[in-house]
Length: 454
Image (cartoon, rainbow, N blue to C red; front, side, top):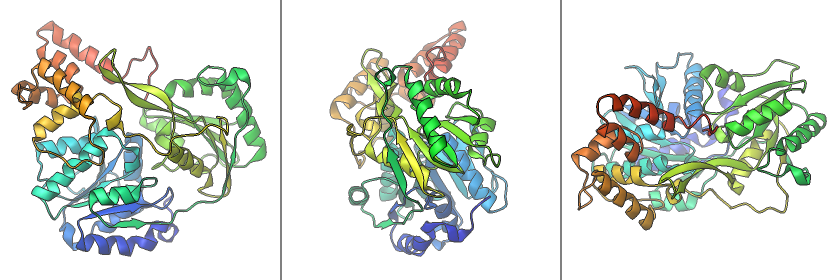
């Protein structure tokens, strides 16, 4: 059930948010988890005179969060999703002619802007959880800034996040900066020692997790949220913990909708629940009843693989900002405990490295060629990686000698996949096209034999 309006700390500064956007087209809004920014800010903007009946787009980095945010806002209005509030993600859409708030994943905005840069039916774009610094999030913000400067000075742009360098972003965005209080209780941090044979990434870490969970169940009340790097580790942990007397659930991007909703719903009274999740549960999602977090300290993030020429997902240590945000999930409803499965002496990077600095950039280079104008970046693409990407696009025939997009390049861009894969699809003939489609789908869905995950 939705919480009463007075329960959201963001409401205390909502008059300042509205006043700022009435006179300035951009805003940076810092609000920790639990403040209510994701589900309270968009509805508050609906009746603003500057919106003039147009739509609000809110970007969410993850599909699960996009669905959940739309469902929460719709239920607060006692409406179905797809009425005033809807969502659009890859291969799935619930919107209608009546939709005024549309929650979308980041890549959707890139396509919308490339198709119609003016966005005449949109009055505001909100970039939620911007601290995750996904490539499409950075690109979308840079494109939106360019549109606002050249075509739509009335367009409102809001960057929202729980953990970001607000001062630096406000300078880049040339925008006022507002900060909301959060809603949290004290969280005790523990570092239970692992045995020598239980270090990551060996599979014996599951024994460390089981011992830590057993300790947590004795020392605390409430449900347990376990952060693991990916689906493979979640499946291993599920098998290792299956003998315990509790309700065990999974939460990651490859589950079907019913399985995701089961993890996000309230549990059975008197039955303790353990949710095994990737970093999809780090920010926007609310898991009721969680009083304990067990954090592996790892996440699956894209890294450029020069051997294949593609980016691939790798397990890497999280940043201190992510560790703090994960720990905060234990303090949303009462005092909690966070057990960290890494040595207390281990030091983490302060913040997450932007994807743009560590992934292959061919798809980005093709988007930039289509856009055809210089952009104002928070972190510009590395010159070497961008030059390498353009070399590849020229060899594919997607760019000409002057790095302008070709007719073939536009076909590749329309395929909405990596240019190399799109080139294989476009050039396939006859029976080869069906095979190319199958191979592309397999790569896009990640190889099930390898067990890679979202």
